[in-house]
Length: 303
Image (cartoon, rainbow, N blue to C red; front, top):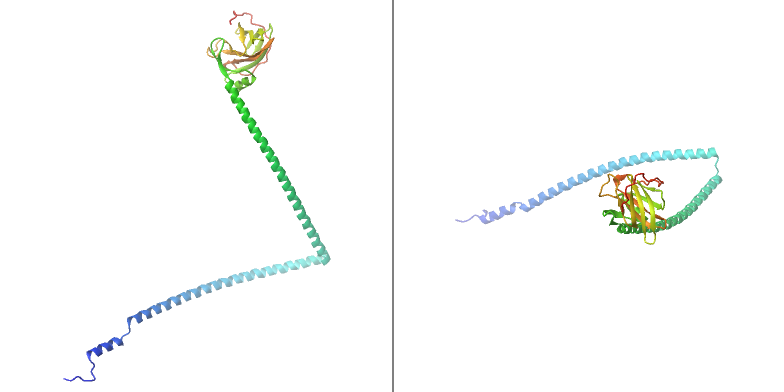
């Protein structure tokens, strides 16, 4: 059986159908291009809208600025008119204006010179102030040193204060050996203190709440004898030494807190020192020493 020459073979028919269809990648590419065009169109439209909005805003601002400029021009015109009217009213000439400018320049130059002079004076004052402040700082430093020295002396003074057993065998409070020590004891405020200077006399002399009579002194040995009048009785303290706590009691006073007399110095005819009493024995003010007669009924002297 012969094959007709006008009928294609199966292989030729397959090849023809394949080449007649559109390739897939061309369709994809075409779709991408269409999407890109759409995106670009949207972006262009958005940019155009933004530009139109900015242009409208700029136009509004331009209108506002134009209005403000018109107002400024109107004000400037009014001001210029006022100046012209003022010049006309005053009759100020160009020569007078030049003179006024010259006067203003002269005033300005004077002000500059005055400011320079003031600045120089301020610099000088500042320098002097710094020097004075430095001097004051030096003085303050010296004062601090003096305070530190005084504090050291005070600590030294405190270190010198000591206790001792009195003539009645009772441990005394802190003993002062001089006026500086006594001032420290007063500052402490543990007891009442009465400073005295007693001379030889047959008439008793008041020392705080008691009366005393100085009977005799031995300046070379630093010894003395005195009589203390208290509670209608007399107590003789014989041959006592300077710096020794001389103790006695008043009626009702605590046996653990006796009254104490301490003598700093023994002179030819006098002694000076202090009397200390417990806090509950009265205030710490020192009454004026006044002669008083010895009590009529005197007890037997005790040493």
